Image 1 (cartoon, rainbow, N blue to C red):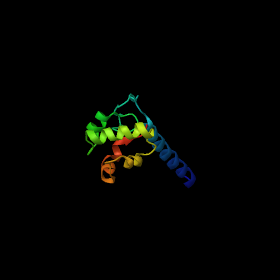
Image 2: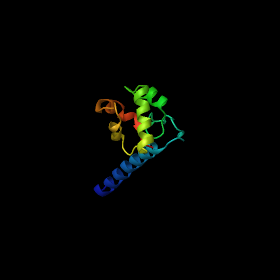
Image 3: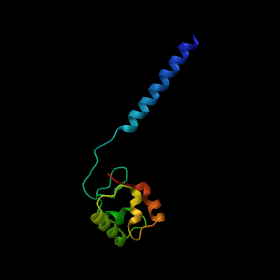
Image 4: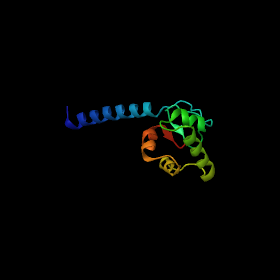
Length: 106
């Protein structure tokens, strides 16, 4: 067998494994996008979650901080970055980092 043939076979095998893995990773199920919904991935939408959801789902966020997040959103419009949460009174870097993986904007 020639070296070129073996290289072609190896390339074809690696490509097929890569594509099937990508296809499995991109499949998704319908997501509930209603306000306050917890998305299947566990992400909390900062732009739609109500204060009760924020209190229940986020670490270190009580009712007062959750209301402050909603009030900030109402006053300034939708969050454009998760880091913008630092602008909310009472939310510091440590609280943001504890919750960063749980937060989304869409």
